[in-house]
Length: 212
Image 1: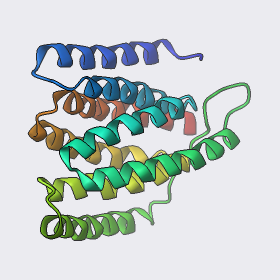
Image 2: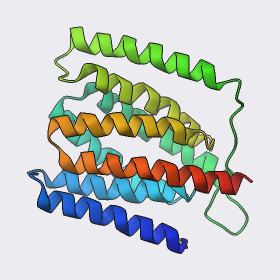
Image 3: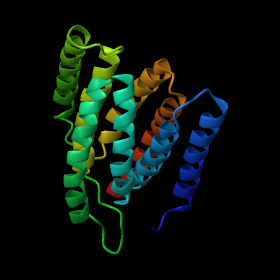
Image 4: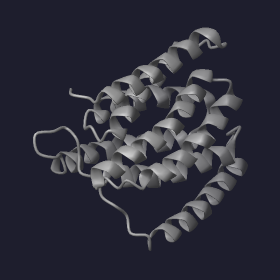
């Protein structure tokens, strides 16, 4: 698996963030560390447009879903089932867009006319799902759960179809998810999402460069 030097540095930094967080801050679930490490590997490789991202992504989905079950984040559980299904299709799409003699893909660029419709749809759907979770489940953070789930669905679809604009949406999702897991007291997951915010910037730069 050939990676740029900058990617290796970023990957090692993310791994160190997870390990240090687990050992320094109060944390009693080792699966948080495992899921965090898998997630770091998946998103850093995804930022490079490397198809190996899916290998770590499948493993991370399983461990993360387990943690969501413990915290009763129902929308997140449903989201990860969606992730698993779309990632299977994503492998097929990315393999077709691999550049010659490389494990990296050629990104697409989304039309600006679609962006306002996506934003409006995401906001409305997030509010409705948050309301349903608040009044019909025992979800402790219904609106945060919803507003990290619906945008993530859209971002995941854009990721699978190789659109670089996914990174704008992932940034919003990661900031809200950081707050959600911080309030839940799972510092490894909070650290993972904080690092993912930085990865969104890195990913957008890399995908923009590849698109050009």
